[in-house]
Length: 483
Ligand code: SF4
Image (tube, rainbow, N blue to C red; front, side):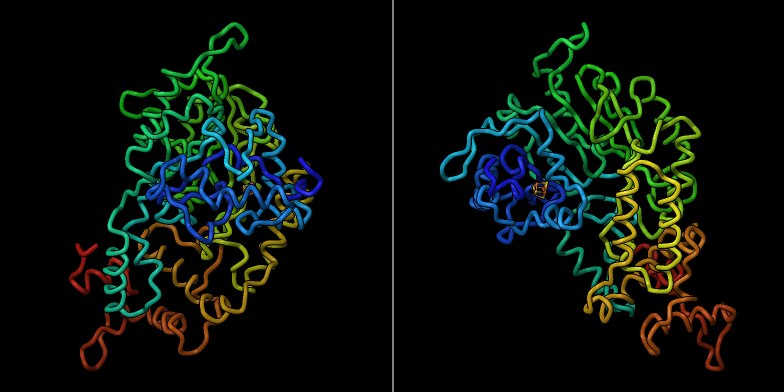
């Protein structure tokens, strides 16, 4: 690597392919979209790898130019944080391929694949969306609709459905077959989704790797020479005829990054679909083979860690979660949990909290800095504090702040059960000073009229009006079966 490129070079665009369930190709899962979008639905795998956009990115990297799709890494480095770019460059499993004068790479350059085959999922986490969870399909147009009256809600619902005709979306039909010629050079695979363990393409591909990959000797046992990394919610361990534990044991390295950001009420609120008892049962099952490990070093053959996505919902649960996992013996130290924070959707992200809720969050996170000991954990908490302190842009403050409050309220109404205020003590319908006359203000007035629920005014009209999208609203409109 030349001096010029040492601050911009990343090995991923040379040997990796990432695609989302929509088919969208990016340099990696955290990278930005190319201005001229790339999609596996329009291009073959080979065309995507050597597309003009990917070649330009490699050229920029080699010349020390910061391509905008990788700003997420460069900005982290500017803030003094370690970036994924730096971590990936330290991975000794992958080798830089031969690069052509035009910055193309050969077919066998592909060593690491992360294709989200589908959005098929059995959860609908509050910080997710339809691109990554099929379960969000019915709710997106109700939760994210910008309108407040029922006629336009219905219009928006129809409009959204027209543009998103399918609940389950796939990166590309026949993708497993298309990938097979590339697999001999592949050394590692990252499976995520959706929930990869319920995705048929994942089972098909895993089975193919199991049948075709050569074995190597690992401490007297023959193991398939490929390293597999999952991002899973651990809700199932068997799918159709496949018992994943049995199959995984034939590979030389399997790492499970288990998405879990709360147990009990908090976990079940944030990750709708998550059931604490099922989760703990499956965790016990994998612990027959897998040990808690550090995601950065992945020092053991069969390891797992937890990925805790911090949001406005579970931020006050961080320490309880860590203590629970430690006390129950599910982790050995802090490094077995990766603490992240959601930066989107905005309704779930700490940065977009109303000003009056931020001090309590910052105080809680600052207190954690005196409790955790590991530099990596402290670094992550410090990043969370900095992110919480950031001020949203002017456009958000003017036009979008009310929207995120509405979205959270609608979600609570649609999903029922615990409400946000029960989980994190934030009751925006009481505390948020909505501009007088704004839709939120009207809603607050409406809620103050709850004592009038069921009563009628002098003209015989109900005083209380059910919130748009709620089940009572649908009953009132006779639209119970509409959605
Ligand atoms: S520099 Fe960062 S964003 Fe770009 S490909 Fe590498 S890891 Fe991804």
